[in-house]
Image (cartoon, rainbow, N blue to C red; front, top):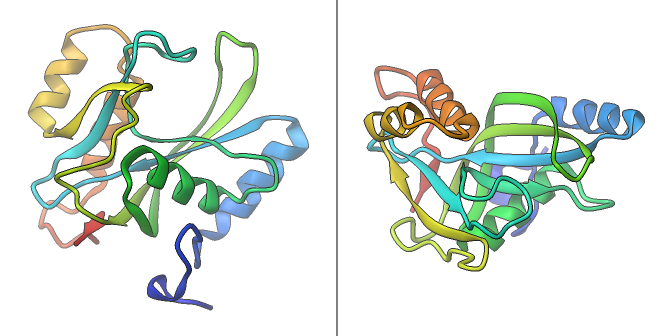
Length: 180
């Protein structure tokens, strides 16, 4: 099995074994897969982006990095592609599963979302944001996340970010979710 440093850019090896099962089950059920990366920096902040008001799904909502899995793509390959497209960073490692759940957007398509802690490399202070899709992006700490959640509106990804922070070790010895 390859180690994290042995894989090619855009690839994801090794990947969590449950990824294959989740993807196979979703395909059998006719559900489209969506992947998301929860990225946490050493200061305990989560990277979130606020979606533009004109996008089709969840306009104006905060979101983690991720998106739809394309035909013939594995969950890890899709995660690596989405991270590169949305931030310019490179997926280094897939960590723990934060949450997997089904949802249906206003377009009627059923989706199975798989959100994981992930490690990335690159210049984390200067992400390459897709400004046609996102109007704001940054590293948010737990206090800011709780304040955003208290403000009402769609808080699904904010709640997910808080869940991911709670999963991390209080002693700070959990694996990093980013590397320089």
